[in-house]
Length: 361
Picture: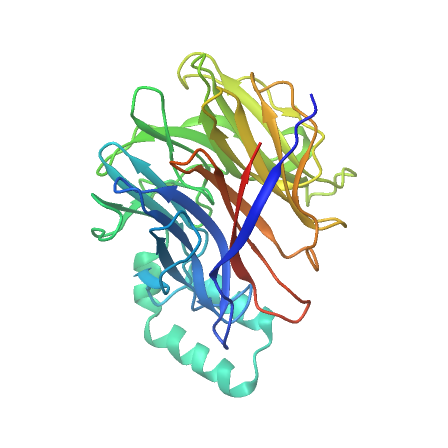
């Protein structure tokens, strides 16, 4: 099936300017009042940085112009991937952060200059207990998308957060947060899971696939429910670090036809790119957007009606400067246009910025 994109304008949401101007891993949703909300990890020194915060921006003109970045959550550790869902009962936003040990490792990897390194070490030392207490996968809930309550820890993490099911309930495909320890009520063995939840509680997660299935490392899933009721999950897959000869960066899929009680075996899509975001269109088809991290670098999409057969690739952008890009997410504007957000750099040495592209099929 050949599908073509009628591309409109591309707009800057988070500009990527200044020493802490790195903005990455965005998501987008249409709020109850019709405004757009875009969330991401912002105010970062670089891709690896202990100081990222959960940032938001708002648009009241269909994504043409955006407010200045606002901080939704800024603990003493690094808020990373940001997901958002506007549901009938309110707006859900997700993020996750890392442990004290992980933060130290990341700051060493970045090899900051001596002054910055000492500052980071002092912060880690002073707030170590706070780091440990608040490390986790976090869910924020608010009625309108502008104000949110106290974060709640959940067992799963995924870049784009929860999804809306056909009956109006909320669910999420995610990876077990890797830093909960055995004995913690939220601990799960590493793997991909499915759960339903609301603003205060969640169901027992159902295992979708254990870590290492098909000899691959599994990360960053997203889900959608099709018109038929089938729940489709798409998962980022990479070479298994245990020594597999498979070397890939692709998307696996599976599905459930019993409401999420059980899932089919994983299958390869053959798509060159990841991680995936799924959005159901008014036509009933599901749109999957993903980043391509091999030349030509860019943002791509594909369509499916049943979760098993995919259209030809749709190229939204092929002008990325390197592999550090992607994590696209798409919403449907009230005009019927599609609006896809993603992060990208405009030069090899630049900070990452978040952009939005308005387009139609």
